[in-house]
Length: 391
Ligand SMILES: *Cc1c(COP(=O)(O)O)cnc(C)c1O
Figure 1 (cartoon, rainbow, N blue to C red):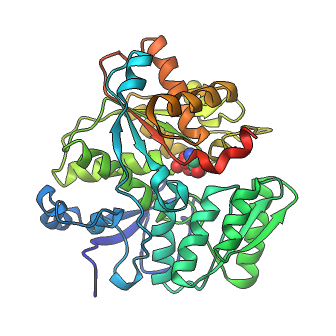
Figure 2: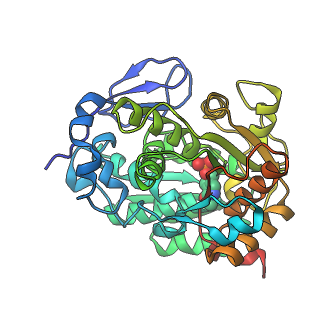
């Protein structure tokens, strides 16, 4: 049984060259930059309507017209997506921004929004014939990949720095992945994984190095609009590492406008990073198109410890075109705010979720956010995986 996917081709985000989507492919061979999935949006708009969506399953697969998977039997699902978008009245009152909301991604399978991206990347790799997949990761991405690989019965190879907290290692192992601990940083893990790719033909599902994790993450943009009755908030604050979610939501807004689901108004997009690793904040402040490698990256928020990102130019474009900004907060601030989110909302967030609140407080203080504006914070994962930070 085929899906309603209207996927047409892949397009390089840098040079614009088109590629056949019916092949296992990583990045643009000319630019070594991300490939973006393109759809027949006119056709998609015929069936992807606000009315039709009311009848669909409460997972991200409800947007199947604008997702790449063609064969229904290859859609791997553990219940990813369609997470709550909840108003946070006590938190809003405490910080003087009544219209504050939290998109709570901690309810995804494996406890983080990495499940969205990996559900798509693994489903599509499975559909296109991959049998073994690999990832260098310091945490949530590896767990999510292991889960979807297990669902499909694919071989999973995870490369982690050896100092990764036990929770993340155990999760991957118990989900059946082969875990290799590397004496080094995430880029050393990347090099080790690349050896296996070359030697054994594994398919690499690193962030933005294959086209479909972005497609999974973009569904956060669709959900926000649908949950706000086809409007968008004034401001979105997003804890940024590789930037898949930021770039993905920006892509989703464009697709939705082309399908007539929303108008041309856009939220101001805000990147928050840690002062221990803030390459995008630095590049934004300098007016640069690309972000240089951040030396000695260090932060307790693992998801933000990404010293260099292949999608840097796409993130910077989304921030600038939206009239957004980029903020670096200290680890002390983000940890303190992690507790504040918990105490004022009942959601126990990942430290990356705490970082969003820290950025919101800064931007309220500076007047960049007005007290009556509608602000959505992304809690990208569950605090339960980070108990070691408080132990
Ligand atoms: C990966 C991760 C991030 C960063 O996400 P990107 O879309 O890659 O920028 C933020 N928070 C958590 C909990 C993560 O696991």
